[in-house]
Image (tube, rainbow, N blue to C red):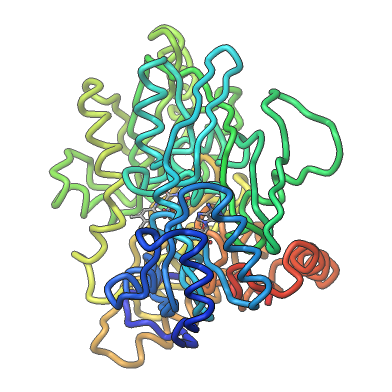
Length: 473
Ligand SMILES: Cc1cc2nc3c(=O)[nH]c(=O)nc-3n(C[C@H](O)[C@H](O)[C@H](O)COP(=O)(O)OP(=O)(O)OC[C@H]3O[C@@H](n4cnc5c(N)ncnc54)[C@H](O)[C@@H]3O)c2cc1C
C-alpha cells in the first residue's frame, strides 16, 4: 500500500564514524562520497510513504569499488541500501536502519548489444528508457515497460522484478535476465547465469537475485535477453456495463488462443479522469478494456485482433471500437502511464495497491474490491494490467477526516485477504519492501519463510544488505 501521508516508519539515524569515512573515501574517492544534508535527504525516501535517513551516500563507479565497500561494511556491520532511481512504491529503497546508500546511477554504461546472441549487457544504473532507445535503433526491445521507465534503472527493475503494460504477452523482468554479476557482503564477486537462451546447470541463482530487493547483494552487471521489436499494432477499446462483465471478458480474451500484447483495465473513475484530464475520447462506462495486438506485419496484428473482436462480440459490451490510428493508440498508452499522477485530482488522500490474481478470478477480484471499498464509504479508482491479473486499486479518501485512515487500512487488508483467497499474491510488480513486510506470513507458509530467511543468512549473515525489507530481518 502506498499512502500520500507523511512517513510513519521509524528510522535510526546516526553520523558516520570518522575512521569509517576515511576508509570509505580511500575506496570511492571524495567525488563519489557525500554526508551533506542535501544528499542524505535525497537518499532518505523513495516514491512510498516511508522515510529513513542514511549516514552517507556513495556513488560507486565500478564493481571493484562495490566489492571494497561491501567488505568494509561487513567488517563494521554497517547497513547498506543499493539505490537506482528511488521510484519504489513500497519503501524498497529507503534506508530503514540508516547506514550507507549505494547510489548506482554512475554505473550507467550499456556495455554491449549483441543482436547475433540476442542479448544486451548493461551496468545497473542504465535508465530503462535509455536502453530501449539504444535497442530500438537495432529493431529490438526489452519488453517489461514499467510506467516509470523514463527514470527507473535496470538494477532497480531486476531487484524489484518490475513489470508493466506488456506483461500479458511478454512477462516481467525475470523472464529476461540471463546472467548477473553480483557482489555479496564481504566483497566477493559472483558471476551467475549465462548469456545462452537456455541453461540447465545447477541451482538458478539468477532468478533468486531477481526480485530480492537488494537484500542479498549488489547487482553490478546484467545480461538481458532482448526481443525483436514489433512494428505493427492493432488497438481496440471495449466498454462494459459492469466491472464484473469486464473481468469476465479478460478471462475470455486470455483463453481464446491469441495473447494480446496489452490488455489494460480501467474502472469508471479512471475513465472519468482520462476523459477530463487526458482529453481522451473514451465512452462513459462502468469499465473499459484497452486491448492491443502486435506483430512484425500489419496482417498479423490485424488477424490476432479479429480473433479478439470475435470474443468481444460474445461478451456483454456496450461499445467496441478500434483506435482511429496509431497516434490515437499512442495517446492511450501515454496517458495510461501517467495515471498514477492523476489520482490527486480525485481526492485529497489515496492509497494505491498492487494485488494480482489468477486470470480466471479477475471478475471476482474487481467486484470484490469495489464492494470492500464502497462498504467503508471510501472512493475507488482502479486500473491494471488485466491481461496478467495485476490490478492497482487506488482507495480515495479525505485526509481531513481522521476516521478515514483507519478505514483505508481495513480496506487494504481486506483486499489482501481477498486476493490471497482467490489464489493471488500480495504484489505483482511493486514488491514487498517495508510496506507489505508485515503481511508476508499471510501469503507464505512458515517452511517457505524459513527457507527464504536461510537463503538471506547464507548470503548476508550479518543482515547488512537492505535490512528491514521483505520480512527478512
Ligand atoms: C510513477 C511510477 C510508476 C511506476 N510504474 C511501475 C510499473 O508500471 N511497473 C513496475 O513494476 N513498477 C512501477 N513502479 C515502481 C518502480 O518504478 C519499480 O519498482 C522500478 O523497478 C524501481 O527502479 P528504481 O531504479 O527506481 O529502483 P529503486 O526504487 O531505487 O530501488 C528498488 C529496489 O531495487 C534495489 N536496487 C536498486 N539497484 C540495485 C542494484 N544495483 N543491486 C541490488 N539492488 C538494487 C533497491 O535496494 C530497492 O530494493 C512505478 C513507480 C512510480 C513512481
